[in-house]
Image 1 (tube, helix red, strand yellow):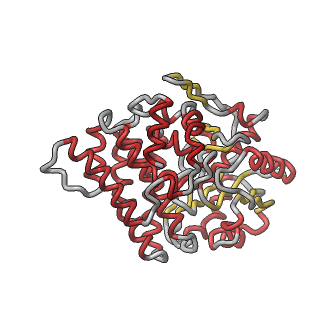
Image 2 (cartoon, rainbow, N blue to C red):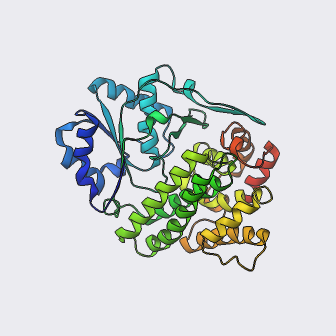
Image 3 (cartoon, rainbow, N blue to C red):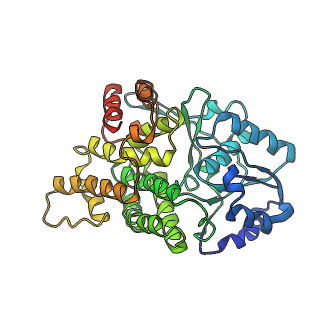
Length: 378
């Protein structure tokens, strides 16, 4: 269930009661644990919070998940409350998987074998329920998917419908203390969800409709958040747009853009939002000939007047519109400016070849083509 309303965090106790939980773990980052949202949750839930884990980092790793699981077992928890960005949501979902399935986390990850073989694990055991309170626009809280960094800097990806949060609370007021930069960069990630869902190999009319509306909301919300960080209505609109983007990839998955960006974070050290922000127009160009019709629809959703344009011209205008939004938001224009070590590009290209995103992309890619894309983006 999704609850979207200014001040809706005050309703979290009713959500806990509906789940039948009374010993939950609060999962957050150090920064998020001190913010408005976490303080509100602690105040409302009181002793129903059996323990807290506040050491989640960007690109949460296997070691963090193992720590969370040990803490959960020690305190005999019966649910999770995630307060924070995508890494917090993914950590709660990964911990739920490991608690239920046992073994090693990597054993439950999905793998893509180039050029066209994809192996998805079937995780059938019941999972502890999750309540998610997002403080970014990553939309990680929406989907059955998640990514966790392994000790070698490779992102393990998972897909389990049983870890989708039971409740998602979207409260624009509770996140006004989150830096606008986090919302704008992760908002570009949400925009990428919508665009990749438009041309995914498993796209469908439902995912397309969600994507079109999500693009429109994000295009309106992100500049408003950039210029007026305390605009709680703009924050709420962004959260809704991001939620729609999560529904898009839940139905249509992601493509080469995310397949590469997973490594830019896990190995390259970039935040997922920044990596997505920089790389999006490059992925769109890569897919231009394979997805011309769908990129033309992206242009319309971005507010471009396409009536006098050919389909190819409209598709090119979609890329231009994304680049203009980048400039408006003050986002880095290349991976070099974002701080990526260029020497990592060969390994990044190699790692990307096992990411499921390449399977769902409308155009298959070789390792050399991925390396060329990374060089162009750098």
